[in-house]
Length: 241
Image 1: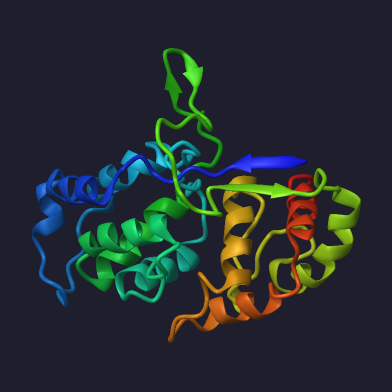
Image 2: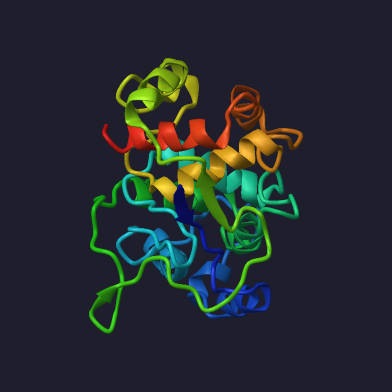
């Protein structure tokens, strides 16, 4: 049985508010609607608490890798979190935290600048370490949710996944390279545990069902036929790309 442990951030909601208070002073300078952008390198210091200083992500904090992610995709997701289009489902606890923290991007100019800053980051930074060891799945808490870990009847099979991916490839590209014209992000730099959960979220109506999430709705519709085994197979195949 394949089992991918998918931890929620150690950061609790009260801690998220404290994090907001610890933000660089510049993040609070400009009122919503202003055309001035907060310097993205200053604002990213807050993002780095979960996503890592090199944008490498952290499984322990349930934060996906960001480095090199397309600016247009990051911009859309930040708008979705800020505008409460994403992260409002009670099962999407990490999304709820993002919807709170994203309020620091006080205007569209800041969201755009931060998105471009993330896109320019070089993927592949080393994982965070604790006492010299990579920090991965260990977590000192219990997340009471069926989405806390992902399991499938048998390990993912890349050969089966290749067949299932044919439909995905129409939008995401045959090599998972993404396609901006079809609003489909690159898949090859996203961790398997994050992709597995997002596919479950789309399938189960936790993501992509909010009014205004046009592209999420497309993913939700495409995910309806996925079983946990198919998700495992898809992830196994995407890992080979």
